[in-house]
Image (cartoon, rainbow, N blue to C red):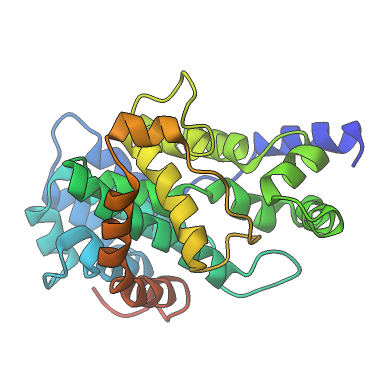
Length: 291
């Protein structure tokens, strides 16, 4: 790809669409000084598809431990603000990118990998006493830059995939070779454009460089490990079958060893079918059900 194409892509990245209106408005309300749960519920219920998808996320074991959620109104009244914010973000992003497969990513496989990373990250976070919801949401969104490339820049991304196949290399290396930047950089810009919290934005930007000076949150280290482990389990399809090296710095900073990771993986395996169900319920199902 020529330098001119790289510059065109950089320019286009500044004009990516924002989150859909309903979740964006709800997030703005949740970040206000005086959060009104009634108002948040009212906003979310204006779009039945958004409300139904949010309920599917909340009914998974990954946000509310599988407890029944009767309605959006009840969820808004019961959940902590940060928990609801992360659930709204997760459901909005899942709804932004439908399943299926064109010439690029297998999007069902992509989201299965992403939710799988979230499940592993949540399990590790719980064992470490870290924020499990943040770890799950960070895992879910860690590769959002890649699906943005696939959806909004299909020609350029097809060039990335062809380069990867031709050179038998890691897809991130192909991104750097073809585009001049990787999905982490794109994802970081998308996170800023969507107004995502900095802890999530850091996970998206830095999960492949957990040893970097810009890493301040344990969730980034946890998602890095979870991504490698999910690839090792071959759960979902992140775009290639490369298994990157685990960062020993991340392991040390988190106080983990191989035995702890082995135990964590044993705990995760029984949850992966539920992760697959969540993907198909949110990006593959009819979301017009009432909330």
